[in-house]
Figure 1: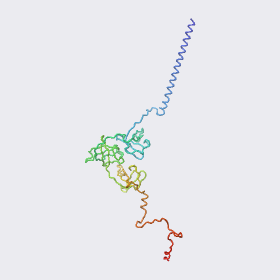
Figure 2 (figure 1 turned 90 degrees about the vertical axis):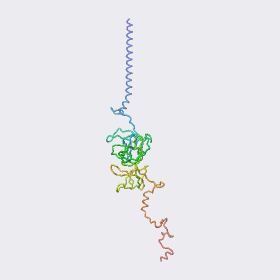
Figure 3 (figure 1 turned 90 degrees about the horizontal axis):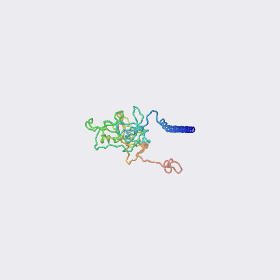
Figure 4 (figure 1 turned 45 degrees about the vertical axis):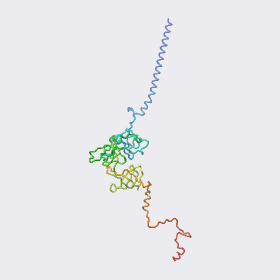
Length: 341
């Protein structure tokens, strides 16, 4: 009887030991799982602390916009939105692939907006990328051609105005009551020829109600280039008394390199704010046959060289010498010497 009781007690103790061992195994497994979870979470915490400030919202991908190049200056420009309702500043350093030199007015581009704001809280464009021509859809152009007047230019022509887009009116006896149409940079045929208030134009209208194919009706003038100084120069034409007409290299068609003496065709525009005139839409007139003119230095030499055309020109190829080696006819000889006696 006592042996049976002892055996039962031993069995109970063994069972208790087994249960304790099982509990210890479960605890070890739980600890291992927690360690694995902590190890997995550690890199994520490091990424957050490295790329994102504590408490700041996660960074989102920037929205991509599309538009048109509306203005180009020395080192910056402006993009016109697809709605033609405003312009956005951009610096040439923000043009992708270093293609700022390839930009032309009216080019189709895509861009994003900078998270930084400039003076007055204005945003600027970044990541400007050229798009293939025809990427952006264009409205259908209606057939009728109108004669019109510029009521308001695009803002790039007059930075002081509040509205961005330009405004045309059909040229009638009562312009103030005639139909008016808005226009942007894409509606102008010659995008380098700045339209100004009061300019006479021809234009058409597209099916969205905007003016397009706008061409200025201006008198073409001809003059010669006086001087060129880097990116600007002057023409031999006096728009203001005693002053030669200023021009900028960006107004020269086909990016032609002008030199003093070149003959050019151009039109004159007047700055509405300063009242100063300058040449635009400048085209070099090539001589017949397309050959370039003589260099200016050669022309100058020919003008200053004094020649008497009434007398024959004699070129001495070799100074004559006598049999005795003396120069020319410095000594009388033969019958000439006798006659001299």
